[in-house]
Amino acid sequence: MDFIKNLEKKMQEKNLNKSQLARGMGVAPSTVNSWFNRSLDDANVEIFLKI
Image 1 (cartoon, one colour):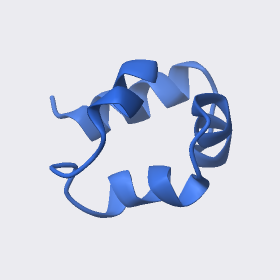
Image 2 (cartoon, helix red, strand yellow):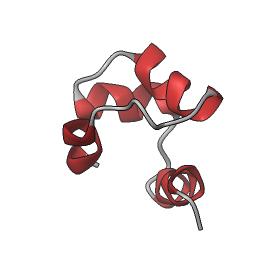
Image 3 (tube, one colour):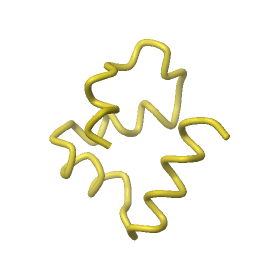
Image 4 (cartoon, helix red, strand yellow):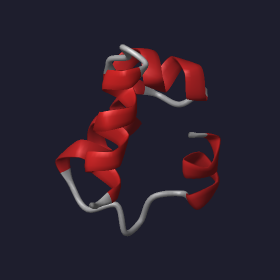
């Protein structure tokens, strides 16, 4: 299972939408949206550790 599928599953379990996830992580909603819309190859690893 890839990262986005795992993230979506966790978001469902915790009843979070993308905006709520972004706010909780301290990142812009556009950052979270970009994870879902493009490759994660250039994403900041430190951000993922917050999840």
